[in-house]
Image (cartoon, rainbow, N blue to C red; front, side):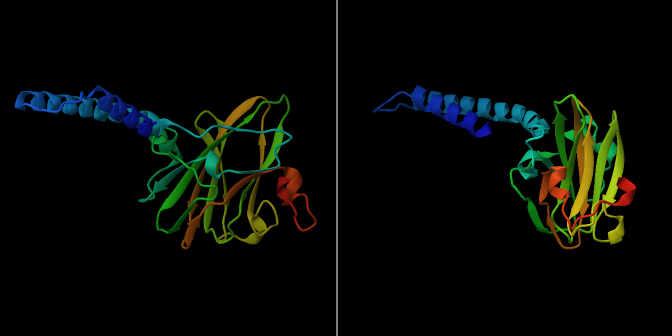
Length: 225
C-alpha cells in the first residue's frame, strides 16, 4: 500500500512537470516549491497510513472438514518482546493490539535471541457443530511455550508446553508439541502464544486435523480424553 502511494505520487508529479528548454530563476523557484509541496503531501499521507498498517491483523483461518494441514506462519501476527514485559492484559488492549506485525514466512526464524516472542492468530468455525483441531509446534528444543485460549471477553486459559517440562505432561505423546483444541459452532476465536528459548527462536507452527494425530506411535494424554 505504501509503495503504491509513493509510486502514484511520483508518477503524477512527473506527468505534471512541463518540458522547458530554457529555465528562468522564477520558474525554477516555482518548480522547487511545487516539488516540496508534493513531497510534503506524500509524507503526511504515509504518516497517516502507519496506524492503519499497524492495526491490520492476519485474516482468520476458516476451519472445516477439508482442512488437514495448514502452515500457520503466513496467517499470524508476531510481536518481539525484547524486555519480556508484555502480559495478556496489555496485548488485548487497543494499544497492545497495534504492537503486532503480520508474518509472511511459512516458518519464521529469528536466530539466537534473548527476546520473548508472541504470536496472534484467529480461527473461524462456520459450521453448526463443534470442530476439533490440533496446533503443532514442530520444534522440539523450544524451552517455553504458553498458549492462551479465549474463554470469554478478554479472558484466557493458559496451557504450557516446552522441553523444560516433563515429557509426561504433554497433551500428545510425541517429539513435537501438539495442543488439542475445539472451536464452538459458528464462532470466531483469537489465540495468543508466547515463546522463550535459550537456543534459536524458530516458529514452525501448523494447524492439523485430529485424524493426522491418530497414529500408532501417538498417544493422547489420558487427562485430556
